[in-house]
Image (tube, rainbow, N blue to C red):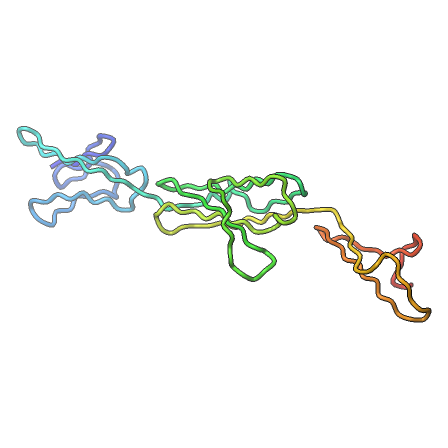
Length: 210
């Protein structure tokens, strides 16, 4: 009995292995059985293996070995943290490998909350493009990768959107108050990154000593 590899190389003849690959061996649980054992299967082991008996005529039997590989994310070629200005385009990359080719699904979750609830984005594939980003896009995005071979994997990508300060007064622009009374002036500022705030009176900056 002869075992032949997908590359047409003779693996074994009888009980003797002819290839240098020590992962392969012939097992004979019974005198009439010649099993080919391959340890530590690799993707390049995929292909048709042929069992041949040198009778007259020669008898052959082929079996196809389909090696499946679980999904993996290539971190060096994937996004990690992206910082943009409002109005720019964000390109998020989740470079994946696996056999069969994995499916990539994108999710978005609120980085400011403690909840793990995720919102599915209507986009699939290794690249997620967000045009004209706004401050509402400032979040954590997750690519979920699965090809039916466990385990599935995922990666979180932080998107930071910077925008100029916006000032909102919490009271009318003109206030009246009696002399000697205390008055609180509220000023709400929205900005990313956080803005440095100063108060001015008639154009003059107020210091702590004032």
